[in-house]
Image 1 (spheres, rainbow, N blue to C red):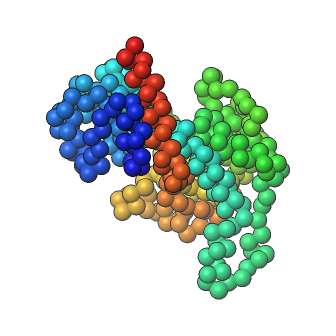
Image 2: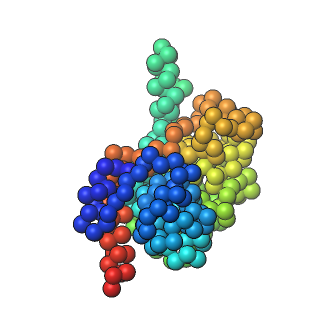
Image 3: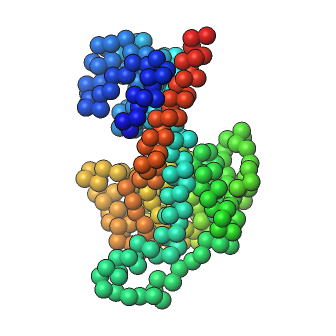
Length: 307
C-alpha cells in the first residue's frame, strides 16, 4: 500500500496493523489472533469463505483497487461482511493509458522505437492511422470505460459503448448501443468489463466473428475475459488488425502451459501487437488516490454502522 494509508485512516479512529510481510498462508492465523473489524487487501490475496472463518469479527473488506475477482463476494454477503473497493482511484490512470495503447498501436510507436535503436530508419513501413474519424467501441461502460471515453472526445472520433447493466446511464462522451450495433459499427474494440466466472472468455471466437469490420483490439481489463487462442487465430488471418494487451491470460510468465507459451510466443513476436505488464492503473498518483477513495468510503461505512 502507499505509505499514506495511516494518515487517511487515523481520522476515522481506525487502528491499523500494517503487515505487507504476511504470506497468504499466514493470514488466517493473523486474523484469528485479533478481533479485527476490517481487512485491507490488494489483488494477490484470495478472500474466500475459508479465510473469512478465521475472522469472525470482520465487518468489512477493503480492496485497494478496482477489480474484485480475488474476492468471493457471495461468501462475504453470507457472512455479513461489506466489500469496499476503489475504482475511482485508478480510473484516470487507466483512461490515459488506454489512449497511450491506442496511439502506440495506430502509430507503430513501440516497433518504430525498436527499429531506430537497431539502426533502421523505416518511415513508410511505419506509416500509421489517426484516431480522428474512427468508431471506437467500448465493451463495458463503468468507471474505466467512461474515463477512456472522456479522453477520446478530444480526438474527433465516434465512441460507442455497450454495457449489460441496464442501470448504466449515458453521458456526453459516448453513445450507449446494443451489442449488435457495437459489432456492426466498431473499428476498435476496447475491453472494460470485470472478470467473473460469467465473463470468462466472454470475448471469444464467436464474439469476435460478430464484428463486421476488421478490428483493432485493446484490453486493459482482465486477461481472462479474452480468449487468447481466438486473438492469435484472428491476428494470423488478418481479421484482427492489431492488439494492445496490458493484461494476459496468465501473467506469471514463468508458469505458462505449453499452449499458453505458444500463444504468448506469437503475441511477443507479432509486429502489430503491443504488450505491457498490467500497468494501466498503476501510476504514482493512483497509488495514493486509492487510499484516499477507500478512506472516504470506509468513513461513510463506519458512520453508518455507528448510527
